[in-house]
Structures are given as C-alpha cells and as structure tokens.
Length: 584
Image 1 (cartoon, rainbow, N blue to C red):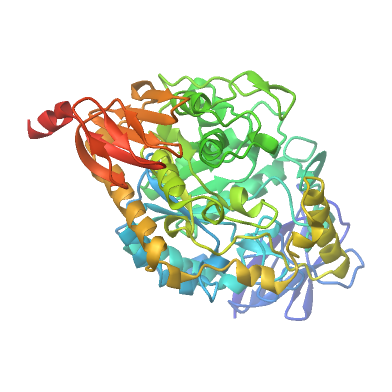
Image 2 (image 1 turned 45 degrees about the horizontal axis):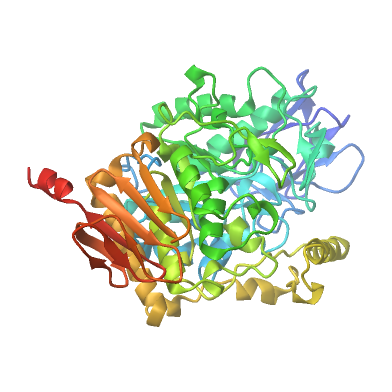
C-alpha cells in the first residue's frame, strides 16, 4: 500500500466520492471543477467514483485499465513500472515508409498483442517499416473494430491490456519496426460512455457516428486537454511512434487555434523531449492541404494524410466499379491526374456530393510522401456489404498492377493485413454490444444501410454473431500456397525495390511523369531513370518504353522502342541513362 492521489474533472455533479476496493472516501472540489483526494491504495487497486446520490460506481474517465469491461471499476496501472528494452530505439520517419495496417483481434487466431508478436518477423521479412494498429482503446464487449471506444486512456483488455501493449511495441522496436496507433477523438461509443455525467464532453454538433465532442463550446478547455492528454499518452507511456487520427473532418472546432494544430505543437514538443520523431497522420475526406501544411505556413502541421482519391482512382481503374463515391472515377485520365496532383477533387465538382469539393495541393512545396496511397484499408474492405477483399473479385494480374501502382508511386504507402498474399478471408464489420437493444439496432442498421444499395438483407453478415468475427481472422496457412505465395513474393520484391532504388526516393509529384492511352489501356510512369509500364486491360499492348527489366508480372517482351505487356501485367524498366548514372 502507498499513498496515491486520485483526481477527476467533474464540474457537473454536486458531490463526488471515491470508492477504492469498496471503501468510500470523500473528495474535495476546487474552483476549476477538479475533485481530489489522497488515500492509501495498492498499486493494482480497483476503484471508481460515486456521483451525487447514485450508488453505482462508475469508471475513471482517465482510467489506465478496465480489466472487467468499460462498465466496471477501473484499475490502477503505473507506466513507470513497465519493462522496456528499446532504449536504443531512435525512431524513424513515417514519410515515404511502408505502413502495415492490422486489427489486433483478427490478425492472429488468438487475437492478442502477444500472439501478434509471433508474426513480427514475418513483417520484417516483408519489408514494411511501420505497424499501424486499429484502435486499441477500451470499448464495450470483447470484439469490435475499436472505433466505438469510451476508455480513451485504457487499453482494450481482451487484447492483453497495457502490459501486453508494452511488450508488443517493445518487440516491434527491437526489430526496427515503428508503431502507429489509430486514435478516435471525434465521437464516443454508445455503450459505456459515462463522460457526460462528469462534465460537458459532448457538443451540440453531431456526425454519422454519434454526438460530437465539445472542443469549441463553453467549458471545452478541459475537454481539449483530455483529448491531447490521451494522444500524448500513447506516444509517451506506450512508446508509439505516432498516431493515425480518425475522421478529423468530424472535429468541429471554431476556435482560432484548431485542436489539430494544438496537438501538432504538443507532439513536436514531446518529440524533442524524447529525442525521436513522432508522426500524426490525419484521416480526412476534405482534400484540404491545410492538414499537412506546416504550422509556420498557416496549416495544422500533420505529418501525413490518408488519401482516398488515390485509392478510388486506382481501384476503379482496375475493378471497373462505379457505385457511390466511385462515380467520378474510373478513367486512366482520372488516375493520371490524381497521381500527378495528389487529389482528384481540388475545388472541382463532385457528383457524389453534388457540390464543389477539395482544394488544390501545391505539389511544388508539399511532397507526395505526405499523402498515403493504398489499395485496401479496413474501411474500403470492411465497409462493403459482405467485407469482401479485392482478392475476392479481382484476378491475380489486377492485384499485381494495383500493388505496383500503389507501392512505386511517390507517396507513403500502406497496405491492409493479408493484402500482400491476396487473403481469401473477408474482413467484415463485427461488434459485441452487451445491451440487447443496442445489439439489435446495430444489426438492423447495418442491413438497412446496404438494402438501400440493392443488397439482400439476408446476405449482410450479422455483426453481433461471433461467427462474423471468426470469419474475419486471417488464415496464415495461405501465405505459402499457390497463387497466394506468388503474390506474396511480388509484394516483397516491390517493397524491396521501393526501399533500395534511389530513383524511387524522390517523392516530389512535380518530378513524376505520367503517360497513358485510354483506348489501349496502358499507363507509363517515369521516375528518374525507371519506368513503370502497366497494362490495365484484357489484351496485350505495346508501351513506348524500353530498358532492362528490373521486375515484372508475367513476361514482357522488350523491343528497341517499346515493350509488349500481356493482359493485366506490368514491368519495371531501367533505362540506359539510369544504368549509366548508377555505374558512374
């Protein structure tokens, strides 16, 4: 037992008491709405708060652990007791890297941080530089995507809790892998959210996932501190190398200093104290360069941004899909324009939105490495009606061309777990809400959403069914079999080429050359002395490029002036000029 100060910001209740292991202690309120008391407590004591005359003990908003779930008592956890061996880790820049997005619960059969450690050597061999964990904050139930979190300071216990996360990050750093954590600050989950009983955490604004967070209304200063404190905690206490910030466009901030700018400044200060780079990656659908523009130039100072325009332009050019937000994409002209400009919609009319959308990116001052390119993400797979991956409906050649265009363009690259071998398992939407009414609302809402788009409701998986979760687990036995092994080998070679080839280290979009033929369905990318020639069609084509074949899918025929490519294939060619410069 040792003295421990318990503190909670709770300006709403008139009375707050502390319950530690069943013993109730009075707390003292200060003028700023904080309640405090110092009592003897064991290092792993269970505790919570009693608000006014309600006899229910509720969790600490800043709880480090929720061992019995988000509705139960919190548990003390001191980050100073964590055992680290990564003292020699000096971090790495996320710009230009290859990121591997994974969901802890479905990455392995066991679905824990410790079991994921066993697969880290595989990721090192694959060649990726960062692991990006989908949200690991505490959420209701045992299984879910994590975006309905309510314990923003706690680690989801079924994954192993905070100690297991420490072991995972430490193991990544020993292998030279950086770690990014997906953090959600735009809404709270519908189950286990006790914050509104403590203070004005919610705003009058709303978004598709629930009530908005109060970051600009009255009494929002402490809410902003709560968010920034949570973000910094992942990087300070758990040694994460950065965060992916979910749907930042849903953060309604009308103050003069946007919360993202404030978080960027605090992250930069923490980076200086820790002596290693820290990255903030924004997810936004606004095509707004301010997110990745330095603060000194009037931007928010984020390191990088997910770029769905790149995904949409690439996916539609390969798959032929045109539904929903794909409606403005599909042509090679659209793909070429997006690769050159970073955004397709840049102050142009979006038919999906029925209005102008986006803002031009200054490619002379903002490098392509601040944008993420990908063929798959948890969203682009899991938010399809049946969670089918591209490997379920595209040929191996289509997957290969997609991979080459995503990995060999001047963007930071990202892939979604299992993509590299064309995993046959789906990634479906799953949840485990303990409340029957919430479970039914989630089930009915999911089916109604896709019924509007022509899907039979019976085909939409029940998110509450444990089988939906089990189906979404990767089947690692596939990696070394048949076509899976061939695709996996291609990804390894593409990543190695991206890493080792000097001509691919130039991330300025102004230096990228793009030619294409809409009718013949070929595209040619010029990066220094390298040429990426792609056939995005069902018949063989001749592409006006020649040189030494560095890497190819299927067998190209190289002539004096052109290279013939089989249907749905590509070739990376090194020109004589490039070869001469390498010899020099």
